Length: 330
Ligand SMILES: NC(=O)c1ccc[n+]([C@@H]2O[C@H](COP(=O)([O-])OP(=O)(O)OC[C@H]3O[C@@H](n4cnc5c(N)ncnc54)[C@H](OP(=O)(O)O)[C@@H]3O)[C@@H](O)[C@H]2O)c1
Image 1 (cartoon, rainbow, N blue to C red):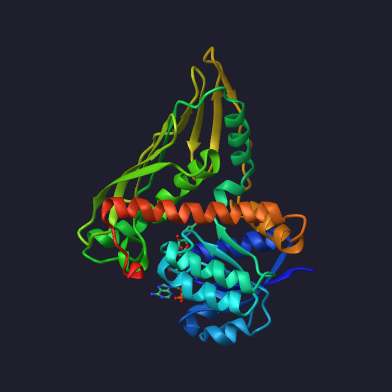
Image 2: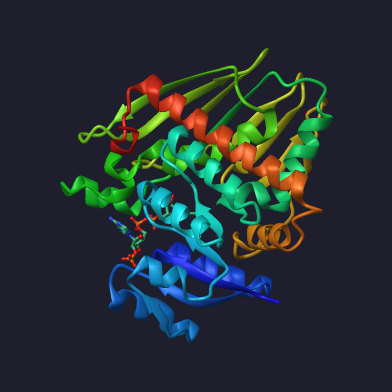
């Protein structure tokens, strides 16, 4: 039986998720929430969906059993809280919550709604090529360090340069380079190496105090992971994980493309497969499995939730280090 899907946020990413969800065969879009009826109808129409809501309570009472939330980060908390209270499964876009205080409140609520599953949509770690990276890292004799780069000029940066404050570059929406792009390599690092024992963040602030780019360093027992990300320029550098003499090179840490292992002799072995055209299908399938088989997947689900919570804490620690405060922190 397919999950009855509701969506919040009507930007391109939601369309991509709905297409992935439909392609997975596990979900059917049933209801659309938008702040504006016209926008909601415009989104719903190509999917032949009539149920469009501008009231969150009515939306959550419409019979959906899973919601995908892709609103600005700062809005996630209240929308997720309401969904869990209605016993609706939640797939919330990264970054799920603004800070550990919000996360703790959500975990407490989940405790009272044990059948509800909460997923942070960090799509890249659900892709087969990420598994390939994990397997190769496990086989490497020694990790000496890693450098992850994810720096892409954002279409919204034009808006910023024109003197405006787009949501994605605004602290008001718990946004900026760290929570928008840095979260991908940070997720990757924590999934591969666990929680760092220390973290530093050297942020380059925009005129509004949000971070436009930055360099984060995650310190582990005997190596560091350096992470560079930004929204106002394009980097074409790959990411790499250094062994002793061997190296794992990842063409794109967020799309998880072009994974190549250079062995001790320097010979290259291409490990990656061609990813699916829609990068959200893998997560849609994984989340559906965890909702359908809660007992068999209990351990994997708890691990995923713990990972998401650790990422949230590290993002917060990094912001603290750089002195970046979100209104949601107060
Ligand atoms: N996984 C990925 O690859 C990926 C890619 C892009 C974004 N994301 C994540 O998706 C989320 C949305 O990002 P985005 O760039 O699409 O954000 P956005 O354009 O600022 O907003 C997304 C949607 O949220 C609603 N919205 C806008 N401003 C709002 C406000 N002030 N209060 C409440 N709702 C508001 C709008 O829908 P209505 O007008 O219909 O209400 C809008 O379409 C973020 O968490 C982001 O990190 C993930």
